[in-house]
Length: 438
Image (cartoon, rainbow, N blue to C red):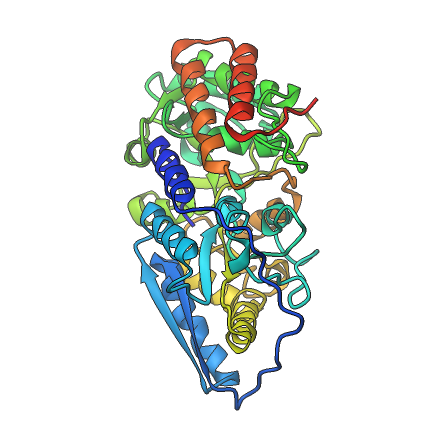
């Protein structure tokens, strides 16, 4: 699922959540009732855009098993609008749906502030070893409750223009490390002076930075909730990102539209981004079929990890009535822990499965009409290798806001990386009360 952030979004989301109160009563259920084909109830699901449409489809297969349970899928506008609405209903306790969609990184934003609304799914659905490993950490709250089930994933790959590489004499298979990537970028520009190796926004966007952080097995916080934005690995990561810019092989694409334009008009030869970018390419650049290919992203070291994650959503059960809770759990299971439904959602709505067993199905292994053979196999292989590095919190939006601000300063004003990240860590500590990791 397409996932990008603007600094204003982070700021407003922080305000929306904080302003709506902070109730810490927990939701406790001893045992859910058993449901069967004779169970009569009604559940309401909130999701947005294509995700909502996909759940309307899975409701059909759910109703084959439970014909008397009515599933109402409400399609929201998504983004800030949806999250503002969540904050209002959770704070008031009025109008809370039975199931909600939440982007994986933002689950703790709600589950930690409003735990009374989130059912612990641990005794009902087992995700260990069955889902994208990078999603495990964001599926649990700070007390070990399983508050969400991973839905779609965003394994990061390097999309590259095979035709430009061939004309520039670049062997894609020789690009193993970021050092190799830089050398290839220089070679590309020696042949095509107006083509940059990569493009990303230098302000109001931390997507590329987070791709590199996860690959380097670090993030803004660690598993203990301590601040790691100024850790040695974080400094190493941002040093590499800044070096790509300083070597002159990157383009400031400014925003989402600029990123699409640069890819379409040939001013960038690669994009290192979540696999959902494939859908954008197919939609916006149908005439370039056969020119774009994918490969693993470069590594920090020769034998290093070449995998990362960007984007994706989960489903959480927020029902309060036991019968509705039981029905909601089964709906989530049917939708997300079911190979047939996961493959249907991938084929029809480009929602790349988080559910690992789906990767072993022959239907998943078929050739992609745009990118060719082994496209899905490469994505599945990369997904299994993603480091479990993404740890978030109830104040994740505020943390990202500070992070994006310091990133802008470093990229655009040449601020010292180590000093700037240490200052950001202190700012986060003051704002959140969190400790800085030693």
